[in-house]
Length: 179
Image (cartoon, rainbow, N blue to C red):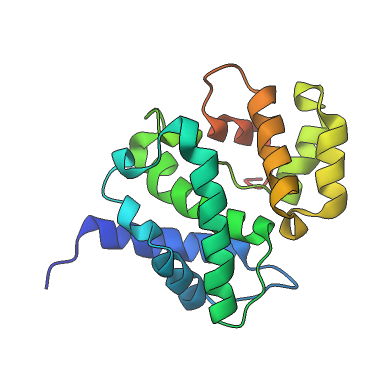
């Protein structure tokens, strides 16, 4: 039986995303995270970065994916916030595309970075982009508790803090989780 690279990427990305997004107050198993990603059909994007939305429509697509992820999670009796849904989506796409060798592709550059406490702490500490107030507000709320508007404000601030046309993943130079 053939084992295509898209399935391999899907399994790995789903594992990584599920492990990263499962947090106190919203614990779920990898198989549940994988099932949610499949219900939203994000695995259908993995064949090519050209399958991702165009940069100008990425935020709208991401909002729809978050809503679909939250709905799919409810079907499994899980309560996801937009912060948790975003982390599941963002790690999934990061593993498959950003770290999959497509980091300079115009559509991949629009992928939202995973938001977590470590990133927000460092963005605030360094006052990245002069947005310390925004980073502190997101920290106060907690990434896993962000609603849609709060999450989108964080992404807007990240985009504004970066150089024009920079890939959003570049903000992760401030993430300290690798240490």
